[in-house]
Amino acid sequence: MQNDNAKLKNDFLENVIATNSIFAAFGRANIYSPIANKKDKEKLKHFIKARLKKYLDEYDGGNISEKEHISNIQKLADETSTYFRDILLDGRLRIGTAQKLLNLYLKYIWVLGWMKKPPPHCPFDSRVIGKLGKNVSIKCKKFTETDDENCYYEWVNAVRNIAGEKIAEWELRFFNETNRV
Image (cartoon, rainbow, N blue to C red):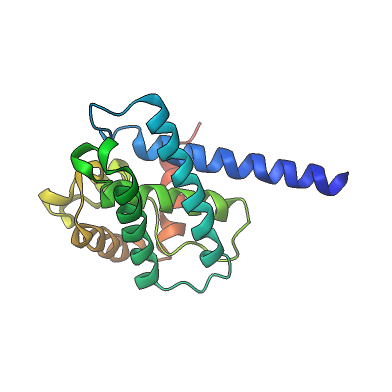
């Protein structure tokens, strides 16, 4: 019974983490085409939850390279676009939204202690990109509109230049400092 309860609790938390990651990534992004209906949107969210959980296995050991991480972001954007082209705005889930999904999901998992090492990067959103200021070009300022892998590299390099620590740890500190109650 105890093991069943622990599994139920973990399953619940995994679902909440994936749901919150989707909500945060989609919140300000205009991702749906005008023809997308509620049923289609739910299928898309279910698909993304399954993909996020699948990627987690790769990160659990903490041995994923930056190149592999960026490849996973690209894969998430491409796979989602392939299966849900008809309901996505311009037929595409953008890199900016895909990175927010995966990076935020990994951040939650890491903060809960379910992942041994910090994720390679942090969720790049308007607050983080805003903090980077002039280190980010005008075309890369809005993560919700970015579908350029070069912008992602620009964000990563800009954080590295100011962080002085691992990117995920820097962002966690920045988040906590700007969200004090």
